[in-house]
Every structure is written in structure tokens, then in C-alpha cells.
Image 1 (cartoon, one colour):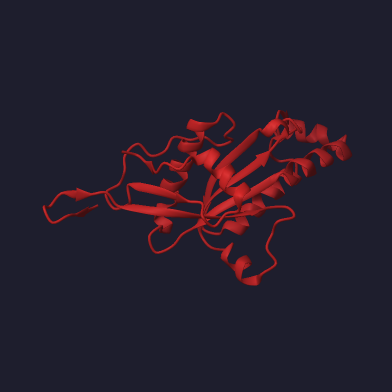
Image 2: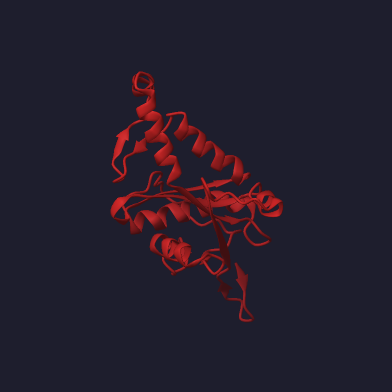
Length: 198
């Protein structure tokens, strides 16, 4: 918080500047952009299914590219739930089901490749206002916001119940760097309204 001339507390705000998407068929070839993906930030992993259904996952990492690789590797290794073209979970990813999937590997490998191919990741990097110590808070705010707006959130978790004193209380989403499809998708998930715990 900061105080104005009358000693009144003023809310601090920070903007999450969204970039992307990246994912299968959409990874940058520019080394400078690629290097930026190795930095810290928050992200939204989005999969689009028939009928306009979106399934979202909000996360954070100190090395975004490594985290994106973990998501895709787990899908291709049959270690996470997989969905069909309509978005219904058809494979749980638990150990027992995974052993059974090995008996029909071509079928399950095709299912995993199709689901992984749907992945698009949008991300917002840390900067001089959005610090790495804010990652958990920002992730929680994103999870809460998308859970309020849609049912298909793969990791909906409660955002922190109390705002610490030393972090911004208002979180804006800046979609200006995205193409029209990206802006439409993130507006659908996050809205234009600021995120806050107050």
C-alpha cells in the first residue's frame, strides 16, 4: 500500500501482460523469444474442444518453458487424464489404467497426441512490479477468476484468503499484445475487470 497526501491508504496495482500462445506447432523459433520463455511467470494452459468447450489450468513457474514441457510430457507419457474430442475425460491417468493402456498403446498414444495437440499456453512474465514472490498469489487469483467464469478448470484451488501487506492488491490483465483470438479467449476466461482479494 501507499499513502496519499492525507495519509489515506491507496491500493497498489500491477498488470499481468499476457503473451502467447505457445504449444505444439506454436513454439517460437526466435532465440530471444525462446529465452524469455525460460523466465518466471504465471500461465494459462488452455485446451479447446468441439462445440467451443474450453478446459483451463492456471499455473506458475520460475522457468515457464520447463513447466510447459512437463505438461506435454506427462500427457504423452499417459501420466495425466486425457479427454476426447468433446472434452470428456476418457482416461484417468492413474497407475492401474496406465498399465491397461499399454496393452492398447496405439489407441492411447493417438488419444494422448490429439489431446496434447490442443494445448495452447498464454503467459505473463514477472517484471519490476510483478515479482517472483507474487507467483503463488497471482496463480491463486487466476484460478479463482476462471473458476468463477467456467466449470472446466483442471486445478481450481482457493486463492489466498488474506492479502499480505507487501503486495499489490489490484491485478489488471493486459491483453493488448495478443492477437484477436487470444484476446477473445482470455477475455472469456478472465474478463476485463481487475482481480482483487478485497
